[in-house]
Image (tube, rainbow, N blue to C red; front, side, top):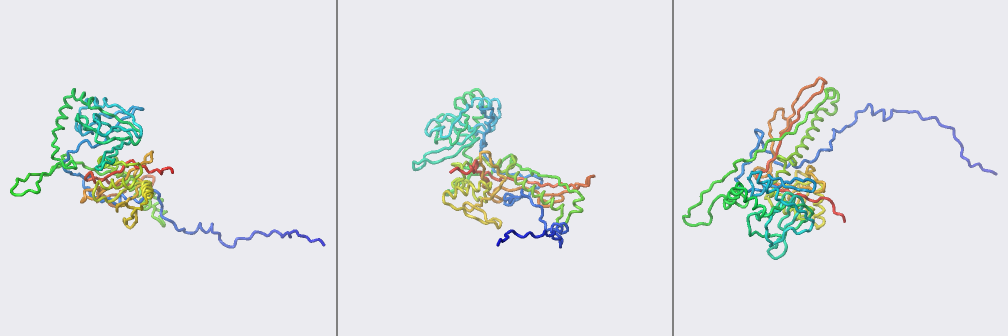
Length: 472
C-alpha cells in the first residue's frame, strides 16, 4: 500500500480587511506629548554660578591697591622667522632691570645682541656654583631648576617655560654665581644676553646709564615680601621709644575694568508666534535657548578674553608648571599653597580625568564635597569643578585654575549691572526692536559682564598640564 506524504494544498485566503483605525492614521489626529526644545551646548557653567557678582555702576569697576615696587614680572614675547627666533625689543622692558625704559634704539641694540641657542631634553644649561655671566630668555621649552637641600639631597626649586627667564642679576653683578642647576626637560630654544654685550651697549647709551642708576637707588628696604610699599612700625619696644610714622600709599594709576557685552538679535516670524504657540510658547522657547547660548559665551569670555579673561590676567608669579607633565597631587598642593582660602578649582573635564588617573596610580581616592546639592570631586577639601571653556592645546595640554572669591576676601569677582531697561534677568535685557515689513519680530538680547582679580594671589594657574593618557 502506498502512502501519499505530500502536504495538502489549501486554497489562498483573501486578505483580512481592516476593522479599526490604524495607529499611523490615528497619530495624525492625536496631540502628542512634546518636550521643550533641547540644546546640547548647555553646560553646568560652574564659573558663573560660583563667582560672587558685584554691581558695577557706571559700567566700570576700579581696583585700588597699595603701591607696589614690583617690576618686570611679565613674560617676554618673541617673533619667529623660519628657524630664527628674535626677542621683541620692547619686550625687554619686562625685565626688572629695564622696566620703564623706553629708548627703543637702545632696546633694539640689546635685542640684536641676544644669541640663539637650541637645547635638547636632558641637557644641563647652567651648573650650580659656576660663574653667572648671562641672562637666558626662554623662547620655547621647559627647564627645571634644582639645588641642594638642607640635608644635602637634590631638591626642585622651580620649573620655567615659554616667556620666562633666569640669570637676570648676572648682568650687573660681576661676582654672581649660579645657585641652582638648570636642566632642560624638553627640547627648545633659548636667547642669551651676556654681561659683556650688555656692558658694551651700556657704555654707549647715556639714557640707559641714567636708568640703571635710578633703578639701583630704589628704596628696596621699604618693600614687604609681596613687593608692596612697607608700612613702617615698631614692635617689642619698651619705655618712650620714638615711634615711626607711617601711611599707606596707593597705586597712582589703578586698573579699571569696563563691562564687556555679548549681544544678538532674536527674530521670530509673527505667523509662528501667532499660530504655533501650543503647548509651548514659541517666542519664550526661542528666547530661552538664545539666553542659554549667551550665558555660555559669557563664561567663555570670562576665561579667555585677552582684556579681562582669567587665563590671560593671572599674575605671572601665580603661574606654575607641573613637575612631570601630568597633574599630580604634588602639583595640586603647590597650586593651593600659593593663596589662602581657595574656594574652588576649575579644570576641563579631560583634565579632571587625568587628575583621577594620577590619584589612582598612587592609591589615592579624591574626596567629594557638596556644592549646591551636587557631589563633586575635591582635593584637600577644595572642589574641582568641570569647565569645558578652558582650552586644550594641540599638544594635549591644558590649565587648572585655583581661586579665592569675593570682595571681602580680596578674591576674584564677577562684574555686572542690574536695573537695565527692559531687564529680563539680572544683568540681561531683552529689548523689542519692532516688526519688519516681512512680519518678523526682532528682539535685542544683551548681557553685560566682566571679571576682576582684586589682588594677584587671588588666582593661580597650573599651566601646561599633560592630559593625554600614557601608553602602557
